Image (cartoon, rainbow over all chains, first blue to last red; front, side, top):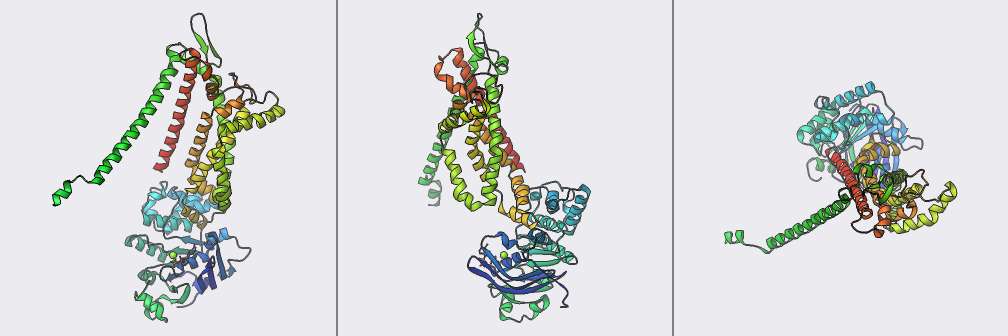
Length: 254
Length: 303
Ligand SMILES: Nc1ncnc2c1ncn2[C@@H]1O[C@H](COP(=O)(O)OP(=O)(O)O)[C@@H](O)[C@H]1O
Ligand SMILES: [Mg+2]
């Protein structure tokens, strides 16, 4: 893989919940405009690691994060960081789509409203652009003012993605965004992500090996809170360096 | 063999039938009770108009509680002063208690959940359990003298009544508000932070907005409670049936008039029937509160 500029880099990131250390030092770089897949069996620390990247771990009680995480060469755990702004720069999509019980329009424009956007025409434009980017405009354009919760799970997930995109992020983190969806809805999300990668840096946690191989450029394999190996997706899948990775890819555990 | 089993009357089925019967009986008793109460109050309350020939309209729109009959056997009796005082006392109380209740609820749910659960909530539950006569007594011995000293007059009146009612409904509205804020799905909070909300924005634009209807219902319950409260109000309102001229002029509410006079009137006479009419008005108003709450809840489900 030709290494490009990195958007995010982590160095020796450790996370403890209370006294119990769940992540034992992960060093990884996320190249700009690439998709990185985080793989590993359930409970290995994928979500924990992902949550460090936009400091949403801060919201959980009793979490300590150590190590260095830099976003565009800035330490995101530094004392002067505006965490609220950081979270719009590094957006996150969760496994279970949870749009607010508001209209589709209100959901998508929400982050802009929080930043003080009042102008009607500009809002309309942002909503349309974000829904188009999330590949759901055609399905919802006639019912923007209906409740987002009236949509199917896959549609809700793409509306949530649109809400994140409307905040104009640089990086999009996705935590198993398709594991609650049917294959067709999942495929739509995958296509959407591939289209988005020209403009965004994407990190996706996935259980689904095929999904990782289909869409990611870089793959990282975690096991029991350790990063086992990371590299170009093709290389990881074709000739993994570590026995554990190979076992995982062959379905021996997880 | 198989058919035996299929058609056998098992013990479980007998139990099931018994249980069902018991439920039906209880529900029937409940319905009978409601119907009886409504019938009793209505038939008594309507006698003011049917037997004593008081005009319904003038009963509702004049303020003079004059139970003596004129030469033609007609009476000029009006409940407007009572209705006005009841409504203004209640609304003033709600206006004072609601903002405070919301702030406490937000504090307990969103700002200091641990402290809230350990300290604030037990206090609220304690306040909920204090009998109304105690509130009335506090009003009488503490509040009324303060108001007298500060605003002149006797100290009795709408202000004293509203303050005591505000104190009484504060725990009601607060605990219901806490419940409604708690019922907001935490994943919405997570989503809000993801979309770049500050803590306060999350509270205001997500939690309050999502639970707005339930919060309204909490306030209506508080109002309903204030409206029906008799004892504490009676102790501080002054108990003179006259149109309130200020917040500190002695007056009376529907409930305070009822509790003050019901023992001093003779069954079947106009003074007694008129009190039943007050009871009927109270019943209708509480029915109205119920319908409003129903309307809100229905709207909530539709969304
Ligand atoms: N909020 C939390 N509090 C305490 N322990 C947690 C919390 N979240 C995750 N953990 C623990 O951290 C480890 C990694 O969890 P997680 O990051 O969710 O794994 P994954 O996403 O790979 O399934 C697990 O052992 C889990 O029990
Ligand atoms: Mg996870």
